[in-house]
Image (cartoon, rainbow, N blue to C red; front, side, top):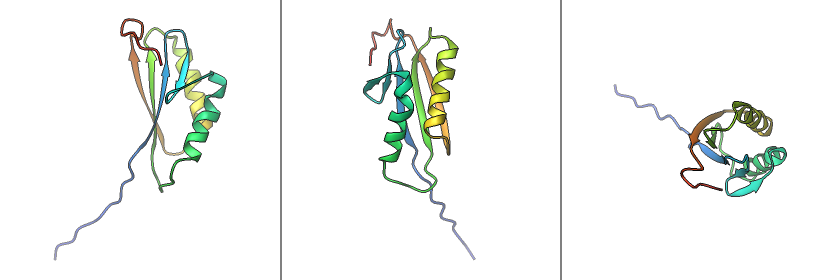
Length: 102
């Protein structure tokens, strides 16, 4: 007897955050202050279509010369915004050399 197990997996929901060398923050494509990140991320997650057990992945694109404390503060804000079934991906870039801003 052959059997096949069908496992339903949810696609991840990505939220992109960008921080340039001057510590200017962007949530998706919207410029914001560090104090408003929690509200912006919460609003994005509340307004998305609900899927059971869908993982949320915070993709953080930051200038590689930023102090680690800046990334730790951002992690804390993101954790306060939404903390269930999350993970983080960090990409450290040379935003000045690459001429990236927002």
